[in-house]
Image (cartoon, rainbow, N blue to C red; front, top):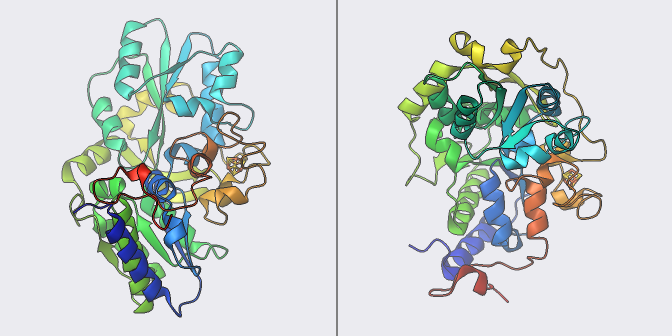
Length: 377
Ligand code: SF4
């Protein structure tokens, strides 16, 4: 089946509109940068009925990294004989004072790497330097960090773990009295690791439908259809639309690797504050590779606020769409990002900016490239 087929997509949109007839205004949240990318790139929002809103939540690991982690990395990078390694987008994320890129302009030592393995290799080649790697990502990337850390490592290597896990963040969003989310599109990649059962408590406690979704336009629309159908039937259960990749059970090996390496701890998320049992720190036997332990650093007790005009907190909580931020496209754009959501390619503001002129659905009629076709156009 072609999951970008114009007729399939149109029929799913029609089915959603049919289910939503007579329902109050609904707000469905996704927590995945790739879902936002597909929704924006293919113009899926333009297909939804007026009483149905799909909003992005905390689905980009770079965006969720608190300013305090960036501040710690900046301070370390300004030390003598220390190099901070990170992925390219992390370099441009503002802390409370500056980004790593600005620190670099002031003489700090930073190096962009494409994987944690590159960082380890760099440490091996530079025994005279302390190499600290910024390890970020959700359950999808934590196993890679874990795999590297359980191998033999050079003594001059350590990490700052900004790894976080998704279900507690969904739980947190639903527990807030000022956020009104009627259902969740659960992230496909993360679910491959943790399994669809991981969302059962969220669905049960908060009585909200959760549907694990794939990444093609028809996947996402069908997931939205399943959520709205549950709402109409007053149901709140977990469904797995992405069964071709996601099992109900977790990936045992990956989860075992995470558990061998990390303890779960309370953790700050940018804009959301401290979320119970939502972060991963290195377990005691591996603490010599934790930069906080190694350099005797103090962890932030409160979340440090980033740039004050940035409304990333409201974007990550699903209170506003990125283009409702007054700075969007003016003071803040990909060239001059004020907040992390405009930095990362998985950030909602950056994605909204890239597709800001995309007013029509772009899907494939059979035999036509996706970007050549406009439904209704
Ligand atoms: Fe922050 Fe820029 Fe997004 Fe506004 S548009 S919320 S300033 S990242």
